[in-house]
Picture 1 (cartoon, each protein chain N blue to C red):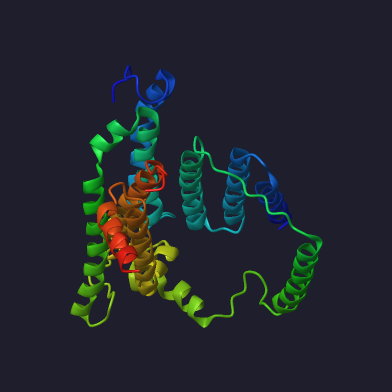
Picture 2 (tube, rainbow over the protein chains, first blue to last red; picture 1 turned 60 degrees about the horizontal axis):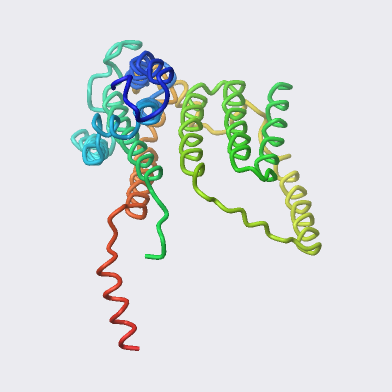
Length: 148
Length: 185
């Protein structure tokens, strides 16, 4: 993230991006981890994290953003999220029912409470965040070609 | 409830502007106004979960729309509508409004659900799942099967978009096959 690089937007935008990008990431992680206590959850947190990567891509150009998270790793992370969600669903069969909440419920208002809900939130976060970033890459770098 | 109606009227005006404007960037900005109005409506109706999701998804779609349309020569196709089609659409809208008015009269009062299941969720949600956010306890515990379906839809949609919009195509093989078909004919 070099400020004097010629690619991307102006120096003003790059400086502000360097200051705010950490806050956006932190807010996304907060929304994700507190999904079972306060409003929010995996979907909103995933979209905010994807937006922070898109923010880097708009301000510094595509090379910097793709160096931090390239297309191959996004695909791997998205598939990992989907597999994790399915695994949580199937592991409910250990208690007899699909999507059974097996783990300890814990105290209300604690971070590690509510059993598998936190794990499901993290799985959906991985899937949505990487998936929407991939969608942005595919739609923005798509060039409508000629006849062939 | 007055502020809700003001927001809804502003949203309808924004949607009409988005359809009727000639400039594509103004159209996208008007579309963003509709989405942000929906966010405010969710906050007024006391649904903060939905408001957060609607806000961030609206911003993401606006960025994608602006980046995907600006700088490309996206052409307008103005259809020339004749009088008969306009008259027909007005008649259809009147019929639709008539029937929907008759149906919506029989809905239960606002904030007074008739479902017994919702009552059970509100009373036993904290005890059964341990989550203090009841919305999360419904979508990831009581009704997690629906969330699985929604996640599958999103996964398939992104997979399809990536398959259609990829850079390296199967150009050579497809053209070979196409030539073979031509020769046979």
